[in-house]
Image 1 (spheres, helix red, strand yellow):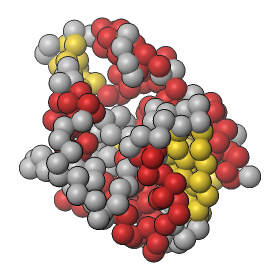
Image 2 (tube, rainbow, N blue to C red):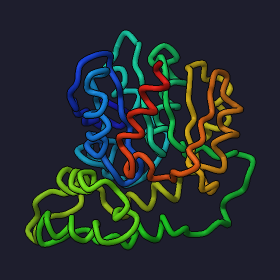
Image 3 (cartoon, rainbow, N blue to C red):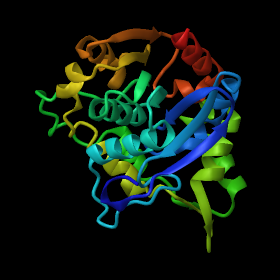
Image 4 (cartoon, rainbow, N blue to C red):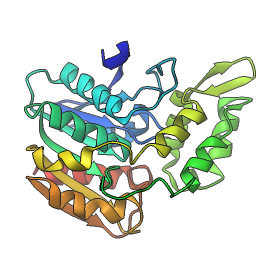
Length: 271
């Protein structure tokens, strides 16, 4: 149970070995990371959470988005999976931010966090005039329903960014990210909730807390040098115990484009 009486959905994705918690990006859900878990099945017992308003975790009725509550969700999931600590975490975008928040609140939970382009920006920069970004506008315009699951898969597979994704990830996104509805199938993550999450991504104070996080953290960034990738080296510099890894041929959707490569990265960081 997280804050606001939200019951966080945790999915066991199989495997044997020490526990690994996978934390998803904005607008997605835990099952999207099943291919990564499959590649690591001989090393880890993998779990994935759904943040509030995503997948099978409900959104509070007030529709407000508070990134600190995403940290609460990650903390609740991590404590449920590994109450005695020793957890490895892999977080993607918003998911990475939630894991960093959780590590700050409970330093004994994680042995290692691998954070792929966390959404952590300097708090001394005024971003109020940035205006809507393509991510925000795209989320707000997102089509909420389709005639069928197959129609949704066909739609997403034909346009960016999902046309770059591994095909099984698109099917997992649709299969676990939509529910049956009178019109066919409907998104579990409301487009407005996704848009508000993007809008408020710079509103939390995790940047100020980075020097207080003692957990070992690997910060990973693609090579496009935009947004979270641009800030990622500075995030690593502010952490007390960190390593920075750049993947020049990747971008913000790297874990979905190359899940096998992402699994290899996780395994390498453990070694």
